[in-house]
Length: 459
Image (tube, rainbow, N blue to C red; front, side, top):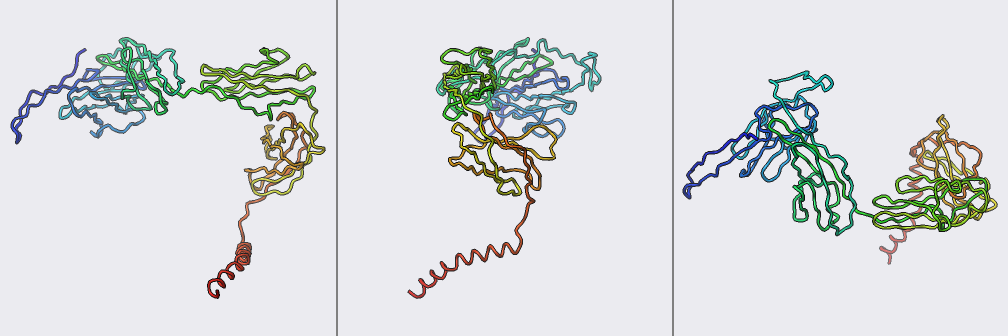
């Protein structure tokens, strides 16, 4: 590869201590052409290298200011001997003569960003004479893992396999910063990263950055890899006492929720045997770390013990649910106490009390809303026969319709008929009400003040 080299002749300068010899310097640019071209939105990089320089700087072609701040399309990356001028998605506005300065020496390169019609395979605009650019094989990453799960103290290797012709050079970043320190080791020509003694401050996003340069062209691509802390599965139950109540001729729903990294594989068993999809008319819905088992309860053969097993490569957990038969709940009696600007308060009576009741539920929407979608809130049971509840965060001066249900198994509910209520307008305290409040406070505090005054002056 031909390089642009600017050399400092060996020079001698005088100082108060005598003669000082200056070591010859060299600036090398990759790609090495003085006039370079790239296409709009095609990633591009120019590397300025000077092994002996104390400081290497790129300058903006428009105002000759140092390129330090990162913008949408252009930024500078640095390591010990190079400064990489990277264009992630260059536009015609990025064209110009860029200057790299290593200590007191400079090298210039004229970059022209051109528009190319890929469908017609011809240039619509060229600002300078055409120079052929050939990237024999653009960088691709293929199928690579983008997530790794680890435990604290583990040693892991993150693999990066960029494909290009000729082969690209790879550098690694962690959370946007270049990797350094003895806790890391580069393997296989810097393409793989070995991390020793994993700690919390090493969890995050690792970036494999591949740069390919030829004499007249370049390509740069990066691939982000997330390293997360592994979590063995644990299971939480939304069913009180892990008991699920079934009502004849209704659907039974059992929900199993796990916490795990990576997500756990959730499997169901009934009475100790694996439950297969379709068996006993069962359906299983999987969503992230949640599995819902549904089956139509027809007779007593559906009762018994159901087990949810959660497994990932770091551990396993299980939970047992007992399905018991119950009757459909009675419709609750609801008494609205008052409305206010953000909601309303109400009481719920369940008469006669039902032993297997799991919760109440309110479904509501604005009266002016013509959609069929209702909002809903689960209301926990109280320890008394009468439950006092409130619905908040509503719009003021708005009419709502609602219904309230008494439920078994969380969502098998007997609802009241539709009713309506209206929130009040937002009101501010009047002068008279403020004076009344102050007068009340004075009356309350006056006896204590008189007693304190008497104690201090007459005793």
